[in-house]
Amino acid sequence: MAMGSVKQMKELKIVAMVPARTGSKRIKSKNLRFLAGKPLIAHVLSTIAAMDIFDGAYLNSNGTIFSGLAEEYGFTFFHRSEELANDQATNDAFAYDFLKSVECDYLVQILPTSPFISADEIYRFVTELVSKRHDGLISVVPQQIACIYKGHAINFDKDKVNPPSQEMEPVYSYATTLMGWKRDVFMRNYEELGVAYHCPRGDTGYFPLEGLATIDIDNEPDFVLAEAIALAQKHIKHSEPEYYPTG
Image (cartoon, rainbow, N blue to C red; front, top):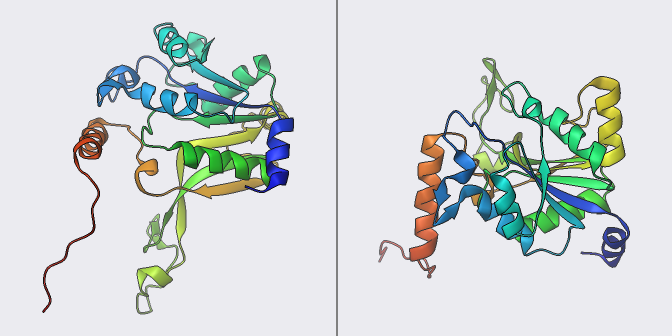
């Protein structure tokens, strides 16, 4: 990272916020369910706790059961109201509620449902958010393959030969693992428009993620996949690749 970016980050107040609510329906008590020997949410908490890039780290939840985990990993517990934790509550609303109480220059939201996000990826995300002076930065997944939206081709022509995937224009889908906003811009957008998540008014950047960082646990098959990955990481040692003999 450039020295100018280091100076910028030291002069600005950057806080991390991990949102977690009780009452998840697709997976019962998802954030408290054990993955590789510890609660799902603890994977992200431990990664952030080992970093020195944030001026504060908060666990935002309606469930006081999370206060113990917050304390264990050195987080400040932010008690969200039940009204902002029901199925109708939006990310805009609970992030705005949080920012009304927490002073900062930038807010970085990190989802606990992406347990394999690394400290390096978080660090590079924050660096880009600050160094490029984005009002909002959104993590995305590049899909470099033919994509369809409402029956229409997006990045290819049905009347032409399909190009090799490596030559195809990528389409980007939200990863949502990492979201970052400039506090004053987020609050102004929410107060004027009622929405701020996508940074409707301001400079928005997009930060590509790939591999294990893009895994987001929403349903039971996702959790099963994460368990298999965690088990493989624990027992499989990386070695030189082997191939079927050609000669």
